[in-house]
Picture 1: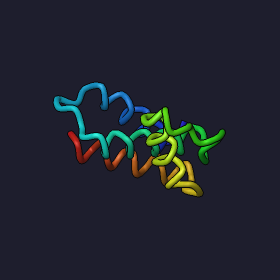
Picture 2 (picture 1 turned 180 degrees about the vertical axis):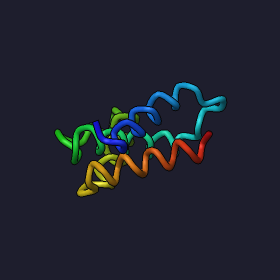
Picture 3 (picture 1 turned 90 degrees about the horizontal axis):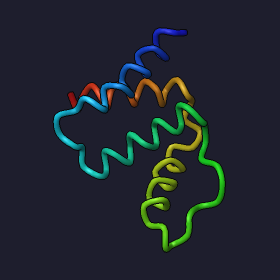
Length: 84
């Protein structure tokens, strides 16, 4: 496993240790970066208007479409580090 992947896995675990819950915008960014790093570009249809949370998550993920997995991992790590 690469050093970047190991650091990413550690950062994912570190989110469970945060003393304060991040604001919603930060949570959406973490979600989007995690999904981009682990799955790739947003998939499936955009959730409907009645699913506001799902729609916000999908939109955040889709906004970083084209970002490489390695770049998404590094941005995720940097964001988690800034929250610690």
